[in-house]
Length: 284
Length: 253
Image (cartoon, rainbow over all chains, first blue to last red; front, side, top):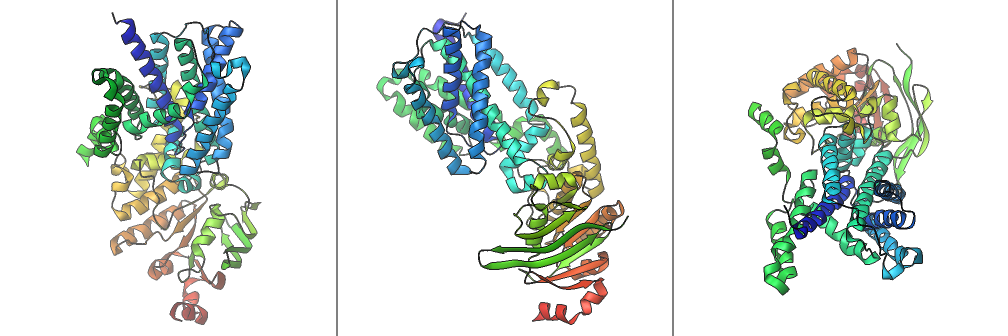
């Protein structure tokens, strides 16, 4: 069987994939969020608070973490309705910072000293189980009514509205769903690390989550899966270079983005991998 | 089946100090083909944007089937039964031909974010299955069924215009607003477009058409409205409008 060390790498990689998917979902509707770390913090602190202080069973605490992430996602969605592109990135970035500072200043959650004594509950099966559900959801979403509304909004918002898409509803749904996924990721994280502090969910976290998805490619959710898996396991593979590890990591990311600016899995590569498109091409 | 489907009264709109529409009154009777012509900058596309809700109304009233729609969001207007095409083609670039038409069915179908979790890989939800067969029907009507799985943006120009019409038709409009549908088409494609517009009209869809090709306007429309500098300068059957001295002056002067 796998060593404890290998399992821990897999669990962290799995949580990174969950977080990358939480960024991908609103991004697939054209809503770029630089605040996914904030939703992760809300899920982590909510679930940890409930299992530590109220001895709530882990599955319930997990659901509560997702719920809080989703509700706050909905709330953040409202100001986001009027903003686009870079402005939206800045507002969601501000939201992430706000959450971090909030938990720094809440003694009930440990403040800057962090929140310790969280019971160990997350196993590799929880992480894999959630990933399977998410993979199934995203696979089906692409060919569904809401999935198309997301894509339409990202492609051309005015045309989508003219064709009958309620852009307000769709954007809020996308933000809330992204918040739920990030909240679940945070709750899983807290019950594996057993200690959380606000710095774990700061700007760095939000930007890495964004990097995973963009590195993998935004054309499909598989991009987020591939990007997060590769980039979170890469540091382990680079251990042999010791002090040069982070520099090499940065260089590798940079080189990859130069070679494939659309991400690892771009539309052309996905078309070649997809059986349906192949058939269409053979006919055409 | 007659009577006004769309009534616009005193519709005005300006961008900064530029007045694009100045108190326009216009009535579109149900069942016909109504053309709007006029020199560039006459306010034709702005009129479409105001009617469909892409732009906030300035002042004036817009009634669709007797209901005041001036302050409704675009998607509510589409749900009420009006849909448009765009002068500069605006298909969804990441989608296939079929998916573009399916998006047009958005307001006629149900299904939220979690609906896909209730489907299985082997069985689509009844709503999605019905939507797909309806989308194929619409594609057959415009002659693009064989292209269903191609990327929309890979289609030749004339077919992209037809796909825009198919996407709009999928929303089940009573009023179809076409913004220069023949722009950039060759004579053969224009001819096919004429046949398509007449066919759609015979199905009971009222057509409001912005067009520059006079041959097409003369052949199809029962009534023509001429705009110039945001005002109506003539209106009537095409033969009469064509001879109107104010129209000749606006175009030549």
